[in-house]
Amino acid sequence: MGHFLSKNGYGLKKKSRKLRKKKKRRNCFLQGPCMLCFIVHGPSGSVEDDWPFESAAVSKLAERCVSLNSPEECARFLLSPGELAVWEGQGRSLLSKLIGPPALFSAVVPDYSEMVCKRKCAELQRCTPRKQPRCAFQEAMENGEERGDSRCLLSSLPSSSSSSSPSEEDGSGVGRHTDAGSASTSSSSCCCQPSQNESSEETKSAENTDINQLPSSILLKVFSHLSVKERCLGASLVCKYWRDLCLDFQFWKQIDLSGLQQVKDDLLVKIASRRQNVTEINISDCRNVQDQGVCSLASHCPGLIKYTAYRCKQLSDVSLCTVAIHCPLLQKVHAGNQDKLTDHALKLLGEHCKELKDVHFGQCYSISDEGLVALAQGCSKLQRIYMQENKLVTDKSVQAFAENCPDLQFVGFMGCSVTSQGVIHLTRLQHLSSLDLRHISELNNETVMEVVRKCRNLTSLNLCLNWTINDRCVEIIAKEGRSLKELYLVSCKITDHALISIGQYSSTIETVDAGWCKEITDQGATQIARSSKSLRYLGLMRCDKVNEETVERLVLQYPHIVFSTVMQDCKRTLERAYQMGWSPNTSTAS
Image (tube, rainbow, N blue to C red; front, side):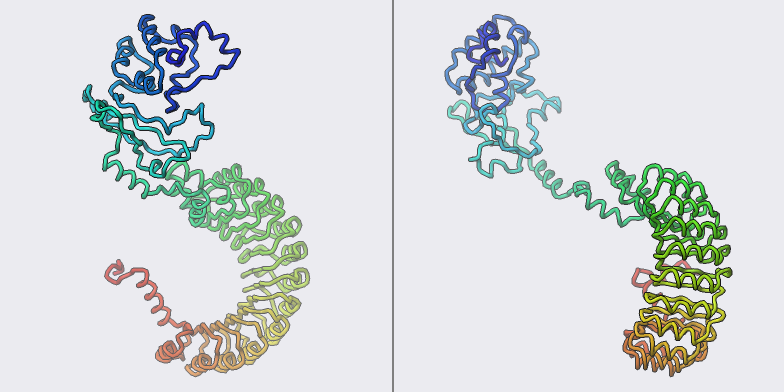
């Protein structure tokens, strides 16, 4: 059809070979939309081969096309409904496919002066896609209505010239129309303008922005505040896009499965097979996880740094041994309350994990000095060691840690078979900041005072359940502990003199817990609150000689100090419940 409507269309069949060899420049009659230029200059092969029409009609239209001398006549010829009827009568016309049915055209010729053919203009400005309005003719055709006499103008494309005004490229979706010069075409109207409801719908859709239009980095930041359970069972089920975001590698570097009883070995195997960049894993209280799952995860994740498995009594030495062998970068191992853990796993940790800094083996009753000594000798970078109720751990382990791990900052041997002879070795630790010596059966006051004098960076000291600690020891602690901020003296053999000494000599202690000290009275509580400038918490739980009226007065007089008694703790609990919206009327308690 392009050859048929060009100036030399009748003789193009004879000159087709010459045109292929020599590129001939054609002038664009219309200077208008690229679709019309494509129709005129389309690279078709032959008129008779491409079009299923009679030769007489083709010849007639070709002669008419050759007689055209101006762009206006050519455009009027193309858009004439009478001529188009000839094409429509011969069958299914390609022109009706490309341009539309004849009813879409009117006798008015649009002004194409500002429209540049794509062949003529190589620097077309890129136009952002916009939702175009639906024509009333299309709506009528969809509704099954017949409107043979209806006419509308084609909406013009946005101008690509640099001289176009901003109003021509607004988001209204309405094409720019030109007025016709003849009176016969002045009565035609355009039906392509959007209705008021459609424009309001577009405005609402622009205002109601979809959350998926946000950058993926922002959505990943939002999802990072969700737990693994919330991401897997909630966000990932919304759509495929969110599922892919929830599977991002950064969410599977730190995996917290603690307390999920539905977690089994098959889940750990899948995680290990798909995510080999896991650095942290927490399976505490997962009672259905066995050694097989932990071994599979450890063997596929050599970059594992933190391993936490509290109260997994079903796990044996095999799990921790596999973790120690396959994860040489391990820095943290918390495996408290595992009855089956033995010294063999600790020896492998000391042999393979030289970067280990934090270990917790509380209530692992099968661990003895043999395993801890091997661990201390192999892991010289240890900074935290905590043992609890390990009856097979004695002074030998304390000495080994003090001699081989100079960077220790946190040391805890609660309830172990440790005496003052082992604790005295802790004076070598210059970086010691927290010391937990609860329930040490043979701990004397001189050892505690010496540790406080030597360890100048000590900030927290826990001496609870030690009946040998007296007022004199507390006084020395208050005088020598220049950096001390927390002092726990629950169930110690102290009186009001200890509290008065703390308020008088210490300017750094902020937390004092003297609960269950039966000799504490109103005088000691009042004096420490009055004299201490740094005190922020005073524990008086079950100090029966302290009256509740005195505590009420101290609460009002010193609002910056939190006083802990049975009554005060109950009041604070109720206040928090009221702040969270709890009401006695809505309580289901009988």
